Length: 104
Image 1: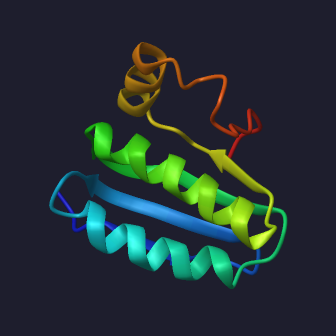
Image 2 (image 1 turned 90 degrees about the horizontal axis):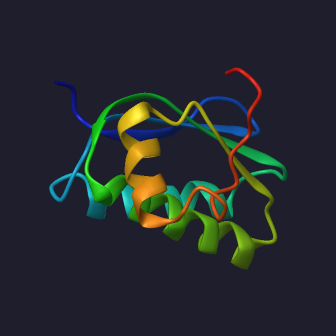
């Protein structure tokens, strides 16, 4: 199990990794907001390195979507892990999330 982190992975890409839960969520929220505000559009959020996620992970994605909209940045999400997809389906969020079907 690794520490959760969001980091810039290129000019137009962010990478979210580790375990997303109530312990890691608040710090990821603040760092993500800052990275999105300073990002280029379109911006890709790669979630393929997320090891495990509670509903906090989906909450973060929704918050990042709001941040991107406020910053005038188009945000696309790639590599959404199975556990996050299951939570999104149950929550009715699959049609709301800006998922990119192309491979990471």
